[in-house]
Image (cartoon, rainbow over all chains, first blue to last red; front, top):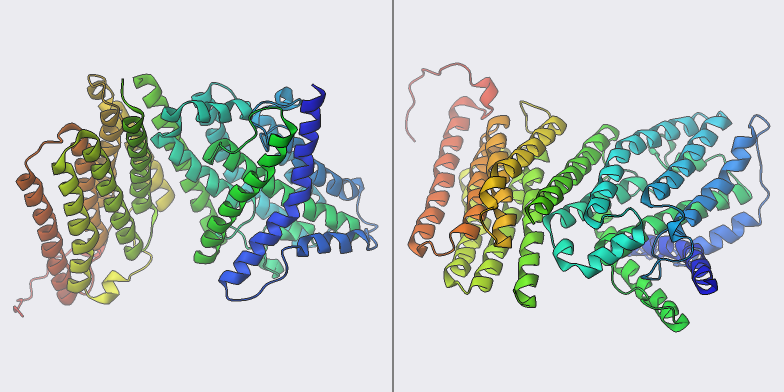
Length: 319
Length: 230
């Protein structure tokens, strides 16, 4: 019991510590593909360090929401990280505290407060970005739900650990038309939720075209650092769900030996590195979609996820 | 009891089937002529992979030869033929006009896929072969979605690709239930498909030369000018 709590804390530290590295590696790879050298992969850490040491400026027009939001955005991915399999194959202490829907709700809560805080400042760009994020959000929501329901229909459970074990234990479920459709739908979802390229440009500095970034424009100092770190952790957590629960449920520690749990860390990092390369290929070969084409992008994701659901229901009734 | 290798190959075939359904949706969702064509090529390659897998599993040399023919005819010959016969501006056209806009088209395609699963359900239940369970519904979905894009597209080339996608769907369903079809029949079909592409390609080129467009919606009046053969 003590051990599983300890490992849960190790998972949190993993997410906390490697989220900036993940975004650093991603941006570095992207620069290399564009024949530039790019900043060091440690640059996100330096950015966070610098921001934590700066003074924070808060407009006198804002309310408690603006001050409260960075902490919430920072803490929410950690909650989700304690619910999903990051390093271990077996449920940890907090695994049964909530299921995948709870994880979705947590992330939704963070997004909700981030949007409120953007409106709170009165800066014209904030509400614009917030409303766009909400647009992407409500289009992504049905896809999220259908993906989760299909997965839990296949695994007969909504707890991510049990879903992951189901894929490992039964190759027939892993290799099915439904599974590949689910993977594609969830990948499109990650691109939309993480503000990656076909939907949003994470490196853009043009306020009018921003979707996800403009919510954080008014934050400074510690608040900005927490928002940034929280966003990076959210992306890492989504990636962990995609890789460890859906795409490649192998390489996790299968027993309680501390050595094996620590050995899982480099394996997960390797998986994430491979996924980063795929992401870079996607991001470098596509152009950002026009705002009103985003609904088509997510509509396609929705269609794919429903097709997955249908395929899994029919193959289950046939078997 | 099937061996582990057989199961793995059946699993890979199932993944392949998912990708084929995905490319069928892709053909409905893209706006560009070239994008539609690319999805068709990718689908044909997945089709050939499926033929290879099933052929390997059943020890059928026919299916493997069939896969090679598919790649040769659909992934290489047809795109080349179309590229040669059609004027470039037609081939590189973006923003194809559609009768129904793309999100609704996708929803309809989804409904067709569901209908395919329903229709095939009783048929599939007599077989215990997992390949049949996977291939038949998705093959039928491919046929229906191809027929739909034939109806909904207004440009000649995407309509042609619709016909070819129907053929792909029939092929995918066919490899699962009739693995010992004589090779000569399959060969004839492959030649037929290339001929369809040539005929439609040439026709389309002549239509664009005389009328100036291949958009079906604008061709509501008969042209009665004498047509001199070139």
